[in-house]
Length: 134
Image 1 (tube, helix red, strand yellow):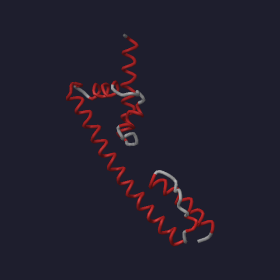
Image 2 (cartoon, one colour; image 1 turned 45 degrees about the vertical axis):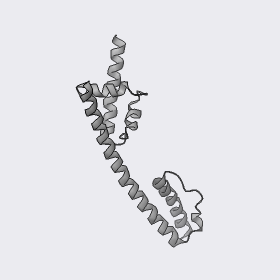
Image 3 (cartoon, helix red, strand yellow; image 1 turned 60 degrees about the horizontal axis):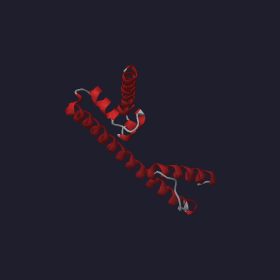
Image 4 (cartoon, helix red, strand yellow; image 1 turned 90 degrees about the vertical axis):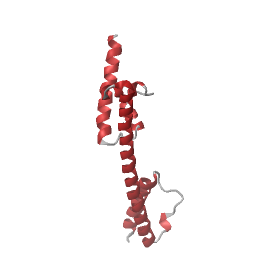
């Protein structure tokens, strides 16, 4: 491995470590690793990243199910329909920032979450319009 290739791999491994663990490597002297050790560590980091991707997908699926259950429960508690349920959820939120609300549910970076942001923004605008008119 040339020096340039090794430096490229070290930079990539720093990114991989961040993807795998959420932070750049500290107290790991990758520069002292042999080429074979670097390759093995890169393979190990790739496995950790792939496992994290699977876990993230499972978390998102569970969060989407929990959101659906929250809507159903809110409707059952008297909201009557999805729009009213969302309005109640928004009114109970500490922050009317639609992205913050959806992020707190763990679904912001899903297709459903992106659509929900638009829906919640409409609910917020409707609530504000009603307040303004009264």
